[in-house]
Image (cartoon, rainbow, N blue to C red; front, side, top):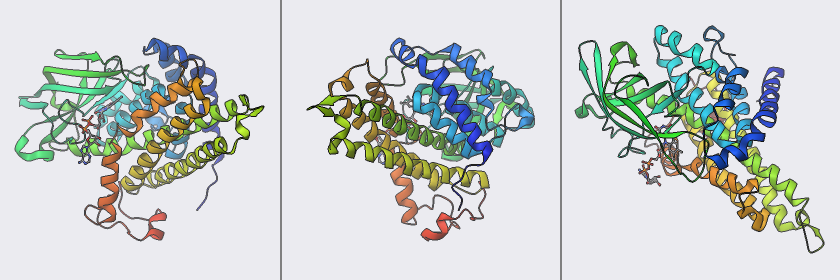
Length: 404
Ligand SMILES: Cc1cc2nc3c(=O)[nH]c(=O)nc-3n(C[C@H](O)[C@H](O)[C@H](O)COP(=O)(O)OP(=O)(O)OC[C@H]3O[C@@H](n4cnc5c(N)ncnc54)[C@H](O)[C@@H]3O)c2cc1C
């Protein structure tokens, strides 16, 4: 087991850290107050090549590993969860499934432009009546010669209004349940496709969250992602990637809360001393420090498994659950340490508190991740497949043979 970063991983981490501090941090407060998507920042991120982070060079990417990707994601989230959401969705929920399930023509059409940010993607699984119960898709697809006709509605779709391409899950044959679901790459300029920005919302003010409407949208059969009936598999694969980046983002939130709390605690005075000298304040700081580190280790372990090509649904779910829950605690305690000023929008603690809330909701609620982990432990549904080791020591190793 090796806890050291390679020189390349360290360099990428520092690259992201510098960009986050210099380019994202100065805009965060204004973007949050205006509650608008920052297209200028999007261009800057694209210009840096960030969106191509994990794509192979062949498709205009940097070809970095998941450890470096996790560290980049953490750094972005440390300063802004809205920007992190844009980054995660583009890479984990759209580029990764295209890379894994796409035909060569689909990869060539989308990935190089997504790597530069010239094209933005969104992932449309959730519907008004299908969130945790994602199989219950009401959006339909019907074949008509060389085309499929899509009808339905999606909701809570990140990047939905700004996207050039949407991955849309739709039911072809409801009698087949999950095996009737197909995934499509829908160009958002196609007739019948429209989006509506959802505002106001509790947090992630400068992240575009939208409803999607599909009214007899004609999509060529070459735009199906994966085979007929493989849409649910595509969705579950995508969520394994998306959850990973949400977990890394949650570590960034904990670290961000720790940073602002330690600074404030050594500035603010009460009873003639720095509040950071009070042991009860120190306890909150110690907890944030411990949870940032424990969360980071869980994320990096899932990353290591992804890089080795072994099944990691369990490790990804554990990282998402732990980091999402601990980010709530960190944000709650950051507000506590700021006292009354924590309740003011003029200080960053309030934004961390609002933005952290979604981390236990999207990409599987905490209840759903508890189910995944408990069913795995009980042998009801092994998260990494039935041949995955169940003893704790072998689970620590990455030698499981089942590939993703
Ligand atoms: C800001 C934001 C961005 C989002 N971005 C996207 C996106 O880009 N693409 C996308 O497809 N979706 C996206 N979502 C949707 C998100 O993934 C869903 O909201 C989430 O999966 C929960 O679904 P739901 O809202 O329908 O809640 P429900 O499924 O109705 O759940 C409500 C409550 O019931 C609990 N519950 C449900 N089933 C069970 C069960 N079996 N056991 C125990 N408890 C249960 C849940 O844990 C929750 O507490 C986003 C959501 C938000 C808020």
